[in-house]
Image 1 (cartoon, rainbow, N blue to C red):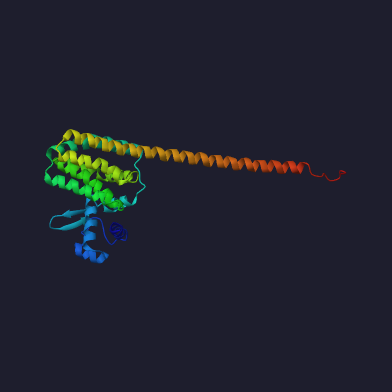
Image 2: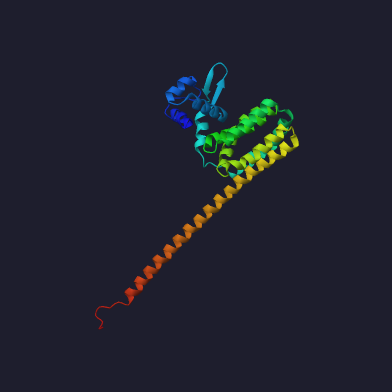
Length: 262
């Protein structure tokens, strides 16, 4: 995977956060990959916040590129209960309104971008990073379609937390589960139905929250069962050991005493 290669270059000190990337063709040659494959990987990293495209100047690694690149590898990362609750509360306050505003203000280009994010998501069944990136792009496109400049800044603020949340939920459900929410939201925005778009976004975020909280509860239950099973096993071994000692003492007490006739 190309993103793993970029991460390795960072780890080896051959690339540095804040540094400018070589031209795309030169980078493709040095990595030994096709330009088309590299271009797709760079797009994913741009969406994830790893690199920034500067008009007329090329691509640069962001200052926090190392920490952001570490996120896609943490496939078993789950937010704690408080983080899930707080992030979902904030998203439920903001994103249904963004979806409603997008339904009122989206133009043809916005709809094309939403459809493209869904198409990318559909084609990401065997590519976890692409799946997370296309899911994130869908939500980012809605923020952009709201035509509120502060919304874009807010999205950048919570993007890292959203990546973590999306990554966690992507492990809990099949691809089709998420599509059942994304597609109706896109159609409501395309139909310029703000009330429906807001309700569908609320349903989508509530479902994601419930999935994560249920999985957290399941993990807690498994840990408790394992702990109890380990305790029962320990006590069982202890009882067997004590029984063996008692049996040995009993056998010793019935043995022959020296000097006493049999």
